[in-house]
Every structure is written in C-alpha cells, then in structure tokens.
Length: 187
Image 1 (cartoon, rainbow, N blue to C red):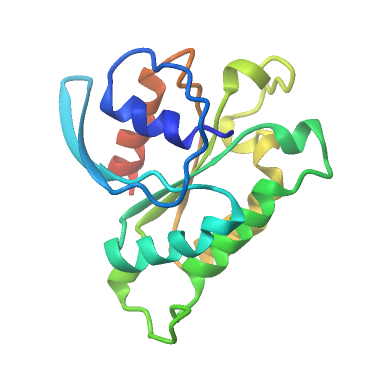
Image 2 (image 1 turned 60 degrees about the vertical axis):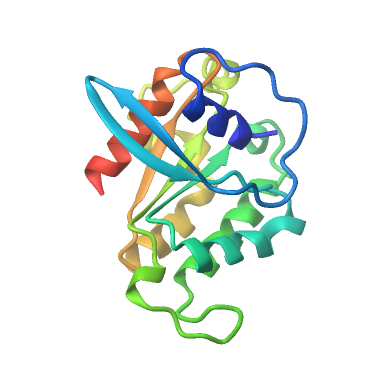
C-alpha cells in the first residue's frame, strides 16, 4: 500500500487521516476538493485509482476522458528494501509509455490537451524510511528516485516536467497541501 487513498482522504479532511486498510479497487469517481495553505485556497478535482496492473486500463480510460492537467504517481521505499521488487518501476514504465505515446490504445491520435502539464512522482511514507535512507543531498538527488530517472527523462523530452517530492501524510499533513500547491504554481 503506497498511499493514494490516504492522499485522497487527506485532500478532503484537514489533519490526521485514519488508517486505511482496504486497497483501492478500480477507479473512484473524481471529486472536487478545496485545499488551503498559506492563506491561499485552491479547488482541485482528483480521482483515486487502484495501482495494481489489473487497473492500468482504468488509468488510460481516466486520462482519456478527464484529461488531467497533473498526475501524481505515488511510490514508497519497497524497491530500496528489496531490489528485486519492481512493482513501482513497471507501473511507472506503463504510465510514462502511455503518457508519451502520440496515440491512445484505441488508435485515436492524441491532441495537445491530452497531455498533462506535469507529473509528480511522490515518495511517500518518509516517516518510515527517512532515517534508514538518509540523504544530505537535495530531494531531487535522493536514491529513492533513481530507478525512475529514465522515465522522467523521457517525459521531459516530451515537454512534460516531473516534480519529485518526499511526503509523509501521517507525520505532517501540511506536506500534502504544500506539494500540490507547489506543483500547480511551478507548472
């Protein structure tokens, strides 16, 4: 469990979010959320999608129908704990290939508005892995993002910037709001 549903709940409810033990199944309808930080209020519309491979077709369907301006791809530290765990890398490759393709799987050519303005790759659960994988470098250089560099480069070549962010909704709920606002402001 990476934290997509926790993120969705965090955007709805300020403060600490309850423990979520059920996996997201399929696509949950997009809903509007109002987030306020530093005196600024923004309304966003977001959807929670299952992360397992059986739901990847739902990702494509959602991208094609809603045309999101921003995508947040959540990872955690499992690939650092176990180098043979490629769950996130395979999902990331699928997302990057889908976004960068000039055609939808249906054979329909993509238009300019079909591409997101930016993609955030968020390393979640910092409260769990932060001390174990300490880093004196800036966030952008943290080893947690290393396996995802090729995809980030591919997106950048397509004109879609990637926003790397380290977050822990459990220990600092404000991090979620700050990450979203920063991504919107920067891109």
